[in-house]
Every structure is written in C-alpha cells, then in structure tokens.
Amino acid sequence: MEVVAHVAAVAAGLALIVVTLLSAVKTVVLPRAVPSVLGRVVFLGVRRVFDVVAPASMPFVRRERVLAYYAPVSLLLLPGVWAFLLIVAFTLVYWGTYEESWWAAFEESGSSLLTLGFVRPDAPGHTVLVFAQATLGLGIVALLISYLPSIYAAFGRREQLVGMLEVRAGIPPSAAELLVRTTLIGSLDDLHRDLFSPWEAWFMDVEESHTSLPSLVFFRSPQPERSWITAAGCVLDTAALLDSAVDVPRRGESAIVLRTGFFALRRIADFFGIPFDPDPNPDDPISVSRREFDLLLVELQAAGVPLRADRDQAWRDFAGWRVNYDAVLVALCALVVAPPGRWSSDRDAPRPRPPLRPRARRFSAPPPRSPRPWRR
Image 1 (cartoon, helix red, strand yellow):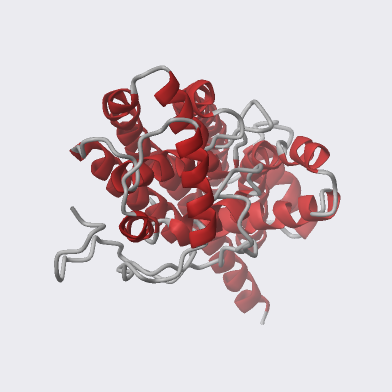
Image 2 (image 1 turned 180 degrees about the vertical axis):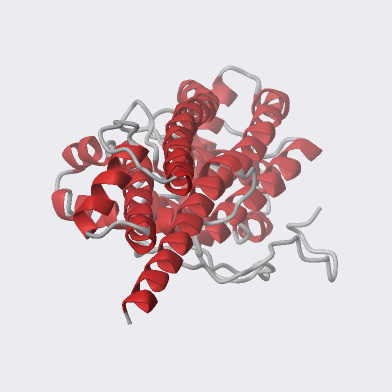
C-alpha cells in the first residue's frame, strides 16, 4: 500500500510539473492565442478580490485608481504561482522516490527551486532531480525578465495612438467630436490618410498582442479617462459615420479600417469566450438607437459637417456597419470596466466572466452570401 502511495505521488508530481510548464509556455513563449487554464484561474481569482475592494458602487475616479493595479498584480502573481506549484510538484516527487517525511521533501524542493543549497541530496539520481528543479526555477525567472519588456513594449505601441486620438476626438473620445474638429480645420477628407491608415495597423497589432499576451487587455491607460477599447470604438464609429452619413467622397480606407477593426475585436472577444454572431444581418438590433443617431446628425449639422440628404439610408448604412462590432465592443468595454465613452462603455451590458475553458472555436470571416451595404 505504501508503494502505491509513493508511485501515485510521483505520478501526480510529474503531471503537475507538466501542467505548470505548459502554462508558462502558453503564456510567455507560444506566439498565438492559446488560453492557459492556470492563467485564467489566477486572473479571475484576483479579479474577484478587486471586485470586492472596488465595487461598482464606488465613484469611478476612485475605482479607476484601484483597478489600475489589477493587471500588474495578476501578472506578477502568475510566476509566483508557477514557482509554488513546482515546489509542490517536486515535493511529491522527492517524497515518492526517497524522502522519509513530507517536511524533508518540502525543504529539499524549496531549497532546490530557489537555489538556496542548504539541503543536498546523497544519491546521484536525486542530484539530477535537484539540478532539473533548479534549472526550472532559473527558467521561470528568465521568462519573467523577458515577459515584462514584451508586455510594456506592446503597451507603449498601443497607447501612442490612443493618446494621439485625444487631440482629435477629445477625452473621452467621441466620433462626433472628431468629425466636428476635423471639419473646423478643413481636413475632413484627410481622415482616410491621417487617421484610418495608422489605425488599420493599430488594430492588427492589438489583435496579435492582446490574444498572445492577454493580460494587456486589462492594462489601463496612463490617463484615467483613456482606454484602448473606447478609442477603438470611436475610430470605428467615425469610419461608419463617414461612410454612411457624412457627405464626402467614399474611399476604401474607411471600409478597410472597419473590417480590420471588427475582425480584431471579434478575435479578442473569441479568446475570452465572449459570444457574438459572426455573420449578422444588417437589420439586426444594435445598442445605438435611431433617435441617438438622429440627434448626433443634428449635432454634426449644427457644427457645419456636410451630411447626406437621405437620413433613412444613412441610418441603414451606419447600422449595417455597426452591427459587425456592436456586441463585441460593448462586451469588451464591460469586461475591462472601461471609462465613460460615447456609444461604447455607456451602453448597458453585464460584465462577462470568461470561462476557464473557452469553447473551441476557429474564427474565420464568413463567405459573402449576397451583396450587402456593410460589405463594400
């Protein structure tokens, strides 16, 4: 019976080592969107603590200040969890192979992983185990050292355009503000070159970085009123309005940035297990009402923005674009508790809780079935 217990301890320890190493590889090394159950457990567990410390009833300024610590704390806690699990795993292996007591096995495991050296094995086979554990401990430190610069490099790239958008769209960013300011300086047609082209590349970069390094989704901007997701919504709404309601010659850049944007947001939402319709109909309901749309057009017209005469067609075209990103935009705003943003984080939506194991789904663009106004 004792032999069976020792064999089971070794098997459990080896399995735990594999699980921990796979989590580290998926989180840090693998350059694709592969969710780690262990990483999700850590982030969801820390999030529940922050939900208690910073509830929805707290004033937003104070809550924003507290939530700014959520992603960094979770990120720094994750390597600690890996190290703790490796100590537990090798404790099981040491006890199952040669140690007489659990405490002696735990001392040797902790001494080996942290390279303290106050416990030394006697047999050559045990020395190999100690060397292997010490190597894994150093590997975790090396992964953390390489992981943080990658995180903050991607964060810096993301925040550069988000910060620059404040000059054009105000803070919090608004598509109406962006169109009005651009009209006043007389460069409405230049939005395609000056705004949409850089944001097309931004969406591609955010899609890659926020799925391969998912903790970036929860990193908040340096300014409390800024957010990467409300900025994305502002740019997408601007492109949709320019392509549907504003009386300027249509160009391909607005349609391209719209498609790039909603594909990026969908893939991020897909990674977090947020449901959405991959092929919505143009007349499906959206979170923006016709009255809100008409009031915005009145606001734009009063500021001198040229508008198309057919308001009904403008609404149909705008809704046909917006339906592609409406659900994922609102859900991601709720997920990250985004600061106030017009037509994005101001929508009523329950905060989604990502499942530990998202349903396996391969996202792909649906084939066009027939010509539609939102697929030009």
